Image 1 (spheres, chains in turn orange, cyan):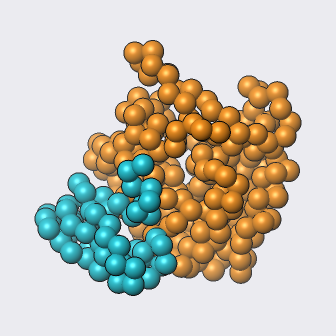
Image 2: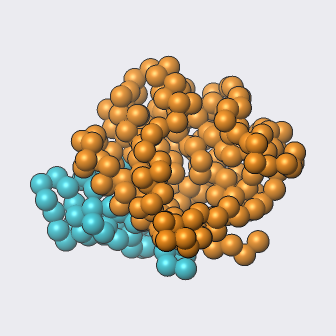
Length: 212
Length: 61
């Protein structure tokens, strides 16, 4: 598949995309609401930092990392407008610039499915396992075949167009997961899985580091 | 970025320590500068307050 790298598409659509992503997802809100307070939380693939903002409720410090500079600018704007604290990093989900064992709570939603190929997705899950503190927990969520718009029952690569207000469309690469395959990728990684569930066309897992 | 982030960050390539060079600062916020891998020698720019820690081969393709 020769679709452009998603980070470049997001650079182009960032401003329009961010205003359509105003509200945090309820699945993330309830994961964070159930969590004990932590020193350091991490939003991997933070976009406009809407979930980093939720993490500030339970963490002394929150990191937000994204591969798209354009999206990070929208995160800077949201941080300034809404007055919450998040340390923003421009980086790659499969090569995290974070020391091991420090993150008590993490959210990794709507991002893993933009990485290709499978080896990079598993490397990224390994990186999440590396940065999680002993006993730390993360919520991982990906778009899946359980969504109404997909007929397929097994995972596949595709592009989904984003339409700008002027009508221009830009493709975004996705790997659409099937639930079994999501379990298999988690199992192939260093992460320990605790819970799985499906909601609104996404597959989710609550995970911890290799040590559990 | 805040200087205190140095306790958390590492080189994305080999996870070794980074060294900070500041060009422009506003209080504890570093606006422009660079992070340098103490082992890899890679330079990661800090631009408009955000460190660019993408692996070098992902920077501008």
